[in-house]
Each structure stands twice: as C-alpha cells, then as structure tokens.
Length: 570
Image 1 (cartoon, one colour):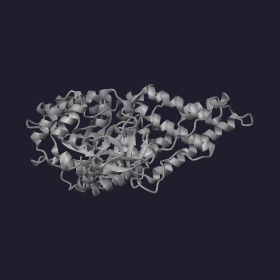
Image 2 (tube, helix red, strand yellow):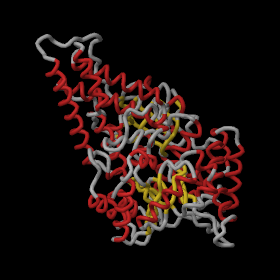
Image 3 (cartoon, helix red, strand yellow):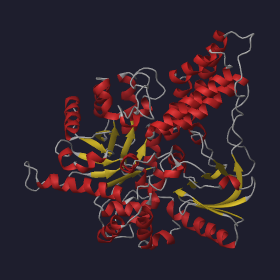
Image 4 (cartoon, helix red, strand yellow):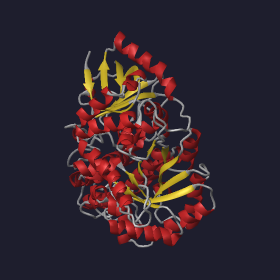
C-alpha cells in the first residue's frame, strides 16, 4: 500500500478505480516557422478566429452550468480573446513563427508573467494554459484533452484541473477528486465543495498511481491510499452509514445550549438561491453579483441587473440576503472596467476600488439592487469587497444611503480592515469576513499554489487572530457608541470557505462570529456538529486554536475536543 497526504477540501470516504486526466496537448515544435505559403495576416486571422471559437465553446458550456461553475467558465471564456494573449501571438507570427507555436509561446509568456505577479493573478495561469491548449487544438482541428469517459464511476487524478473542466465535472461519474497541485482555496477545491465531491488537493506523488488501480480517498483527512484493505472498506461503510445523517438541515442553526448561529448560503444567481432555499438555508450570506457581469463586453443594463437580483431575493421572502457588490479585477477581469496592464492586480484596483478608476458603475449597481429590493420581500443587506480603511467604509455607506439601501456593510478580507474594525464599523451596520482572501493576504501565500497550501490555511493562528480582532472591534465600537448607552455589537459574519468546515465553524462561533455562510451542501454537517457544543465549550476550543503555534496544531487540538466529528465520520 502507498499513502499520499494532501489537504482535504471536502468530506467523504470512497474506494474506486483511479483515472488520470489525459496527457496535455503536445507542444508545437520549438522554433516552428510559418509556412511560406501562409501569409502572416492569414495566420493572425486564424488565431483570432480560433480564440473566438474557444470563447463560444466555453460560454456554451457556461450556459449548461450554474453557480460557481458558470462563473468560472465565463471568466475563462474571456481569456480566450484576451488582447494581451492574442496580440503577443500575432507579434510572434509577424516575426515568422507558426500560428500554433506563436499561441503556445504567447500563452507561456503571459502565464509566467501572471505567476510572477502572485496572488490572484497567479491563479489565472491555469486559465491561460487551458485556453492556450484549446486554441492550439482548434487550430489543429482536434479536440482538447477532456476529463476521461468511463462506464463505471471513478476517482479522477490530475496535476490540477483547468477551471473549465472542474466547472463541468459530472458527480455521477467522478466520485472523488485528487490533485497533486492546487490549494484549499483554488477553483478546483471550491467547485469540489459545491458539488459535494470528496476531494484532496496538494497530494504530491499521486501521479505515480497506476491508471485503473483501486484507490481509497478520505476527503476529511486528506489521505489517498492504494490497495485499500478491510480497514479502508470499513471506514467507507461507516461513512456511508453516517452520511445519511448529514443530508438534511432543518433550518435552525444553533449550539447545544440554544445559542443561535444562523447558517446561510453562498450563492451566485437565482438558481443557486432556489437550491439554497430548498436546502433550508436561513438566508443568503453572500450573493456574488459577478454572475450578472462576467461574459459581457459592456455593463449590463439597469433592467437586466434588477431582474437578476430580484430572482435571488424572491427565493428568500422575509429572510436576509447579503449582496456583495461587484468584485471585479484581479482574477475576474472585465473588459469595460479593469486594467489588464496593472503591474500587480492582486493588490490593485479591484472590488470597491474600481469606483476610483471607473466612477459610476458602483452607483448604478446600487441603484439596481435598491430597485430589485423594492420589488421583493427579502431583507436586503449590501456589502463592498476590498474595503481597507474607515474612510472607504464611510464612502460606501454614503453611496448606499443615496441609493435608498438601509443596511450597508463591508467585507473584511484585508488585514487593515480587521485591525481597524472598531472605526470601520462606526460607518456601517455589519461586517462579513471573507476568509479566503483574508488568509491569502495575511499569510502572503497564493491560494492556488500547492507548495503553499500549509500557509494558505484558515486554521493559521494569525488568521484566527484577525477574525478575533474583527469581533473585538465590533464590541469596542458598541461600547464607544454615542447613540445608545446599551448599543449592541454590530453583526460580524463569515462568508468564506472556512465556514463550511464543521470543526472550524465551532471555533468561529467561539470567537463570537454571529452567522456562518457556506455552500448549501455543507449546511447539514456544520449544523450537526454545532449542536454538540455549548457556547462555553466553543469558546474554550477557540482559545486552544488561537493559542496554537501552527495551523496543524490548532486543527488537531480542536478535533481532539470534538468527538462528534469521528462519530459522524467527519
């Protein structure tokens, strides 16, 4: 038996045959020249046409997907006609390079540049490599490598999946996902969670597993083993027995002593919202409004935006729906809004900051949100991403007031916002912790890179300290409020992927977080574990985690204090 240890990103234990992603498209020969019979103008036109064809194909796949998968496909489609990539290829063609080799070298160059930038832009390297191969395949008239087909369910093994492939995984065929690269907050990991697929990422060495070999995967422990025996079969049987207890959430998030911890859903559109409501989510903690913008070459009209937002609001009449305003930039470029020439887009104009470079888009979006809210019965809250200072929070709150929106808030994903939460919350009504970005920025670790997975872990004590600082900032703000002597702390929720980890959810509750928002599939497991601890116990476990010297130690200490995890097969 061989065992490989990576990072578990979604629970589940399965045994099945391994299937590897097919080999990548063969690289065009180094130094391949343009045929003398082909004019550079013709080759350039062919490249443009191939890019447009790939974009169309990806958008067609996006039309069959929904939620996070749809967003990823639409973002990847934009890369297929990205001016930076196409212009670089045409420049090489004009210098005498063949079209296929030009696209390949241009893609390699753009990908390396993005990788050097780090952060969000490094994540885009996967999109570029995928799109580069698809354009070359289109030029050759062959199919690009796809997820293997099989008559029986299988465990998919890959270096890392291209976003376009991950977004269209068929969970009836792919029963688990294992990658040698990637990280816990990568697109691959996020979509695996949304599909409910047991998944392990950053598992070095798994390419050595023979195709067709029987493999055991434990998505909670992050373990992959070959030649599974009786012990692994028993573990799978226990999981299958316990998993049935984790399929339904009754719509009441609370601790063992009755302390309420509402459990909300992260959604990316009306269909997601309807599915979340059917899963008994107590509201929406994160509506990603990018779904309305991605794939468009121009800003959506007021009417289009109103209709899109109202579709979500209507799924939760009388319930809270937290809308995140457009988080464009970095890994979500928009041709009418973002600057592709920024030297470091991860630290550049993205989220709320786009209002600096392109005033008006945010104001128009807030007007559309307000219009949709006036036509629905949902309790609409609105928050801005990438807020860094109290002054920015005040400006956003004023914009919301101008639009007639009564409950403005901020995303806390920049460490400065966590450390100055008391003053930030002087201006807004709530805060929501985006732990994906907060972790990446706090640890200076690209969330896409497998070698940095240990750093890019929300269990890091430094990240827990920033979460605690945000909650304490809310308490401090309430104590110093001049408006009410008995002012209550303003709500601080979590809408990052960390809320979907049942053990970490207990820690977050112990730190004083008021609501948790996650993929709807995670609701039953999180609810089940929260109900096994009192607030006092959750606080004690949070203290242990915060006092630990490492993420691994923090996780181990908390898991040791939560016997329900083993009992439920988590």
